[in-house]
Image (cartoon, rainbow, N blue to C red; front, top):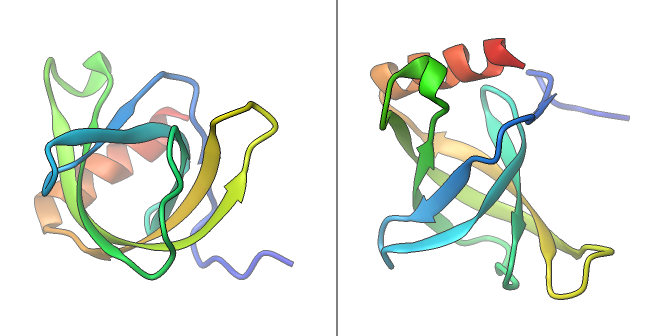
Length: 109
């Protein structure tokens, strides 16, 4: 049973998510909702860690637009694709402007 308050939408654009603290790509967006997201990552992401993330937004939302927010990693599972991991995040800190960007992104899917 899915206990999420906000449904997740499967992503149809290749959107990169970066770890702002390390300045590296963390993974690519697989699904998103207003309070969380799932990434496909090339490395294991430990659970219960807090990240400052930047999500590149598709051109429909503005050229070079991104959303920044704080998120906690909740779980990691090995993907069927070798060397890839599914990682679930809960958004824990986001500004009203970035929340609106996420709302617009979710509406695209």
